View 1: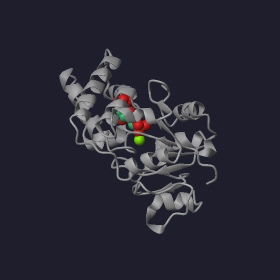
View 2 (view 1 turned 45 degrees about the vertical axis):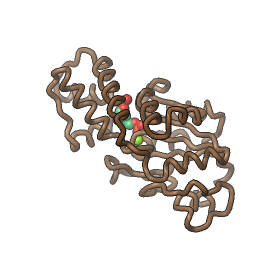
View 3 (view 1 turned 90 degrees about the horizontal axis):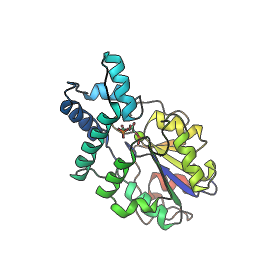
View 4 (view 1 turned 30 degrees about the horizontal axis):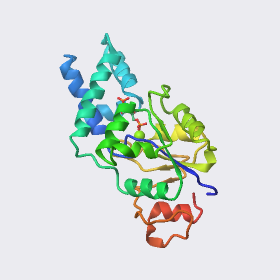
Length: 242
Ligand code: XBP
Ligand code: MG
């Protein structure tokens, strides 16, 4: 891959395995509001095909024949619960992610976030993992707040490219889901997929590469020759396979 200048990251499932916390937050919000809904893992796996929490609630309400009077308020409560649970700790970035972000930054690559989740959730995750300041390392932080049309629509990726001022072929996207991959591909961005617990087995046709995880030591230099033990990603990047 020539002229790599930017890395664009999805959040849920890619930076961290957050979906079980999202599911717990949805369920607690449903309890508190007396809806009596409980989303099991199997139900949630199916519901994840609908990206965005508000959209997911609306779909489930529709399929259940229930009218929810104020979905935005219910979703705000879910977001508050999620933030509290993230702040409790216990969530780490996926293997290799910290090193990739730090190494890319040290080597002058631009960083961006392109996610369908709510901005407050991204801030909570960064504060609990890389530190509150780390979001400032990202030249573009594009979330549901800035790009309301959710993946697989490419809106959020197009916005990230616009803010970065880069062409899609100068970037790599990191995704965990088929919907996310479709969005990145539609924006023209080569995409590395690391499937997450909820997305294993989805169709990742069109990905530049599918890796079980990223696993790269902090010392791996972009732009230099990669010793074999620098890990999958660095090796693929530096040997021109992606
Ligand atoms: C994953 C999602 C999100 C979360 C819930 O987004 O679909 O909707 O499940 O977040 P991504 P909200 O992988 O693009 O980060 O409730 O804030 O919508
Ligand atoms: Mg994701």
